[in-house]
Structures are given as C-alpha cells and as structure tokens.
Amino acid sequence: MKKFLRTRFYALSIIFFLLSTLTVKAGDDVVRPHQFDLAKLVKASVNFLGGNAGKAKVLLEKLKNRQTDRICVCEIMELQNANAQYSNVAVLAEKTNNGDMGNEYKLAERQITQEKKQMKAQFFDEIKVNTRIAVATDCLSLYVKLKQESDGLKLYDILDADIRSEVK
Image (cartoon, rainbow, N blue to C red; front, top):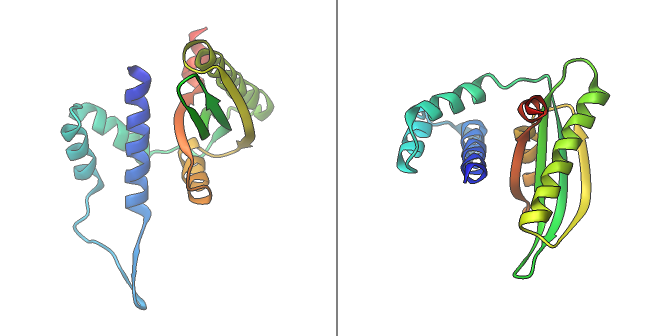
C-alpha cells in the first residue's frame, strides 16, 4: 500500500511539473495563465484524493528545491505473470551525488536489483530488462523525458536509494 501511495504521489508530481512548465501556443503569441497557482492545485488534488495538506507541502517543497546533484538509474523492462504481461515498465532509483559517481551508480543499481527480486518473488514470474539508463539528473526529469519519447511508458516506482541504502 505504501508503494502504491508513493507511486501515486510521484505521478501527481509529474503532472504538476508538466502543468507548471508547459505553455500553450495561440498563433504567434504565447498564452500563460496568470492565476495558475501550483500550490493550490497540489493541495486541492491531495485533499480530493484523501491525503493531508502536510504531504502536499512536502511535495511542493521537493518540487521547488529539486536538487541538481542527483544521479538516476533507470531500467525499462517487460513483466509477465500468469494473468498478464506488461511492457515498457520503468523502475528508477535516485541517489545523491556525493562526489563518487561510480559508487553512487552502483548503490542505485543495487536498489533496482533488490526491487526486481521483490517483484519476482511476489508479483511476476518473468522479468526481462530491455534498457538500462544511468544519468546525472533527478529521476523525475528523466522520467518526463522518457515519457515524451516513448508514449507507452509506465512508471512502476522511483526508489530513493539514499534512504534505502542507509536502512541496512
């Protein structure tokens, strides 16, 4: 249930990010909504979905203070179980770059490997990795870029490798 809520919040944050950065072309002029307030939209959406306003404030702070010193590892895979088959499913892991990028990439990859083991043990019979991507950016930006390039891309989860690697 926790992963479901996390995935829903990440999906909402992606929508809000897109809404806040997109402009609409009207002929030669650019139209921008002057009354658009991202904070009010996030709070209203979270309240509508049954969340609390505290989580909305945390989400807004994360969107405003996105760190650029992040690295992201992504695996796009095909998942299959007895009931269904899913293709173009992205699992991303984000880690803070503390100077040793090679080690940070390894830690993020390790989190994805652990998540794949959990997925295989609980949900899927077969997991086939099609693409691996490792970049020096935050995972939200990478997912938005990948989503623009591949229309059928589905987000499984964005893992926080900083927290998960500290728990051990």
